[in-house]
Image (cartoon, rainbow, N blue to C red; front, side, top):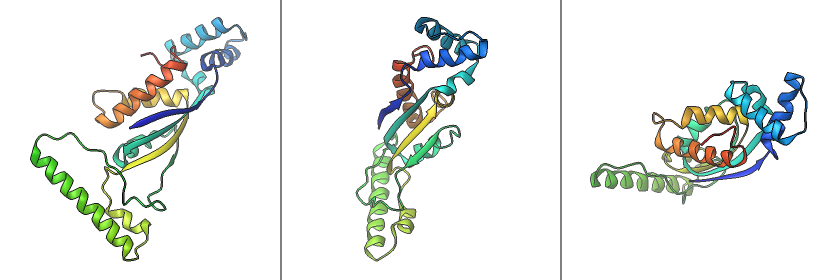
Length: 189
């Protein structure tokens, strides 16, 4: 798994504080006041102010299963690597957590057969868009994900929990770490 912050609103907490000042009739360009105001908005649940800051991430090396959980975040926007147009015959996979050697063997056997059948179908003339139906859900994928800070906070709050599946939880934790480095008062570690 690799998570890369591609782009973010410059000085996001200052900008959030400036925009929130409009709500309170107290506009200011003082950086310290703006940062305190942004933190106050988060503490008081005035989260709509977070919509003025955005971040874009490249998320790669995650399974299709994980991507399906990610795209359920309806306030984020996505571009995903296409299995319709891309040949995934040499794609990597994300392995689950195994309990014993039998599971390891069974899993790897099924995966190798799936990729073998995928290659055979394409070589026999089937379109990739149809052959992809046999690919395992552990096949890795890549997405570009963009959202405002309110949407990112919502995603993190839903997916950075012990109840979340381990892979999507790891994605949420890494995104939170990277966002907290540019907006520590919004994304508290």
